Length: 393
Image 1 (cartoon, rainbow, N blue to C red):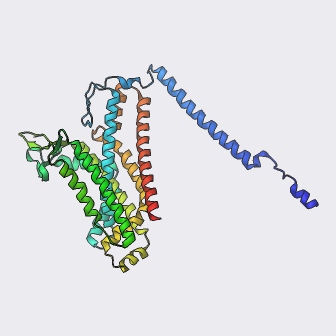
Image 2: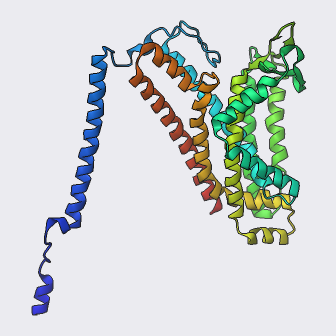
Image 3: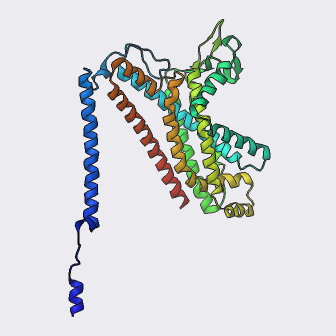
């Protein structure tokens, strides 16, 4: 009985310093106080400096006239437009470079990563040299290499390099045919969306059929025929024409012009990031158990189907998380465009900042824009990652 009464007694806690709950609450409160004190000090210091320099704060300057031109404008813009529209143009240019760079870097990176595991000695060594070169050079130097070492030494417009489909390449950029959309051309977009939906339906039904009967269906060629064939049939009688570039005495006229700044930035970011993606892909493939490959080969599959149907789907679960980081790095590295004069968000916001003196607001806008882009990229990749994990189960 005495022992039971002793066990029922509440143990002595001793000093409050030795109590883990009180100690944890104390340190958490201290961190919160220090954090908010630091924020208050920064804000107070910024407000005092702005008042001392007689600089008005706020975002009202965004409605003022910009007064400067932008070379690449994906939307309508003139020097009479507002600062807000100028920032939108810079943001759209950043998004265009980031999306195009992610697509190109993924294609090149996967190709190089698979090539590093090739049985062919020459292909394997070429891919290794590519990775070691681009991975160990700063991205800014890669941009200068493409801008000053490759595109700048191309022939002048009079001696442009003729490419297929009526395209031209010279030191002033890349010229290709431009689509001229007429009335009723919206049906082409509808046909493309319908073709994508039909291709998804065919792939879904083919998987169900293969699970039930074991019979395969040519999903790739059927989907390709749908996605290409339906839009072609849609614009067969529609007023859709193409404006081809034409050589003149000193320059090229007509067509769609991609300037060398965009080309050099796109190629530099893509080839630089592709070197890291290649290593991620190689590690993901190496992470798949060798027994999976041996089992697939024992079933009579060749090396191509084994890689496409067995190895790559399992490697994607390993590849996708670090791949997300490379996509984020590519988006943030696009801010180096200011070095070659491409009007991305950083360059445009820098011009706005210099003209208005609104340094705090300008930096805040850039931070929020890049934060939103990164969060959207992470969200999309997390959805893809969850989808791949669900498929593997």
